[in-house]
Length: 286
Image (cartoon, rainbow, N blue to C red; front, top):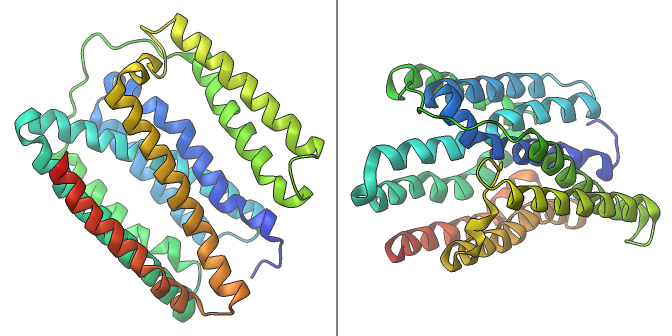
């Protein structure tokens, strides 16, 4: 619809992911500083505003900017929600709560691509964003009475240096990887320079986090724990594969095979069903 290049429009997804990555490390600090209800409702409101603006976007640049706003709101929703549920449930009921959380995680990957395909085929791509509006409004209404508002005593200071190193470092690496499609590989300076800058910033973040572990944005010492480190590595690998597939497969089906968006969504259902079945088994194993 915008008559732009794939390399440009991919930033609609990449910008959203980077904004989420920048917000997630702030979730723990914000939860202590402002309380769960304030943080949650602010994030939902930001996601709601971003969704509406994305729906009325008039150019690729405006859509990318509004997706960043949406991603800033989405970043803290999951960690804040999980933290509140874990604190409320306690150790004894935590496995049951996590299994209940697995239900939307199971249904979402199955119905999401199909619903998206129907919206794009029968209405407009703008409804991909408008469909979020009633969900966000209900979430805001329920949050006013369903979430605790208390702030945690003795909150820590925000690690501004860590934030200044981590977010630009991630952004530089993702930008460098994204530019490989434009320049046909890793040999071009437009790819190498951002990757090197990103690696240096992340290395500096690691040194700073280990030196100031008491106030670090992310406590990297947790990775030394075998169970935590292996789980984090598994989640990283799974996310790499899942999000890579969900980015590439729809393009393959629609561009290379000339399938409709609805047909492409139906072809993604088996992956979602398999993810759902695995979620049931993994919750019991955990």
